[in-house]
Length: 74
Image (cartoon, rainbow, N blue to C red; front, side, top):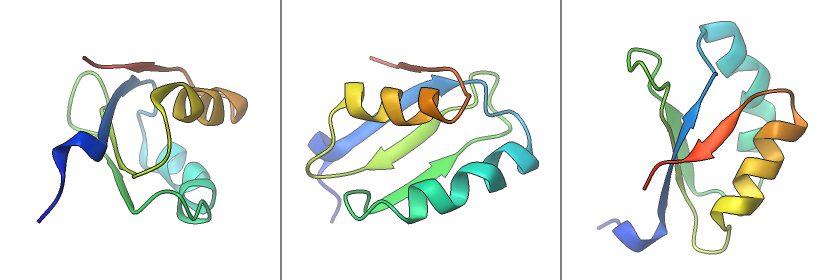
């Protein structure tokens, strides 16, 4: 069962399959991320990250560092 306290949601500009593939090695390679996905069909291109240890600020920094916009959805 997933603990919803450890699910972080973000609005992004990751709007294409190519964008998603560009971030795949970054997100898959981060041992602190249990699971992640990006909803390319949503107008906010929602990034969902499951992590016990990452903060929203850390995820935003990671995504921004790779050239994409990211802000937390509350």
